[in-house]
Length: 82
Image 1 (cartoon, rainbow, N blue to C red):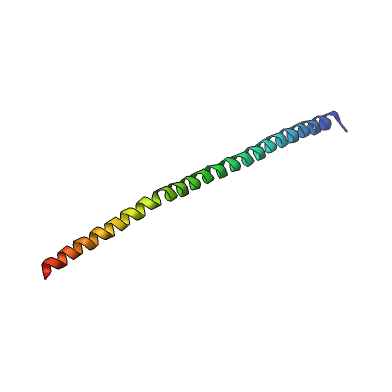
Image 2: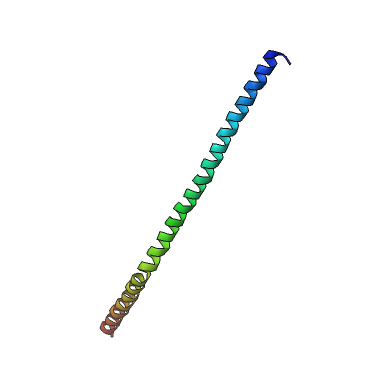
C-alpha cells in the first residue's frame, strides 16, 4: 500500500468516526426531544381534562339555571296571553 493510499484510508476512517459521533449525538437528541414533546402533550391534555372536570359542575348549574329561568319566563308569557 502506498503512503498516499494509507493517508487517504486514515482520513476516511477519521471522517467515518466523526460522522458516527455526530449521528449518535443526533439520535440521542432526537430521543430526548420526543420524550420532552410527549411530556409536553401529556401536560396540555391533562390540564384540559382537569379544567373540564373542575368547571363542569358550574357549567351544568348555569345550564340548569338558564332552563329554569326560560321556563319561568315562558309561564309568565303564557299567563299574559290568556
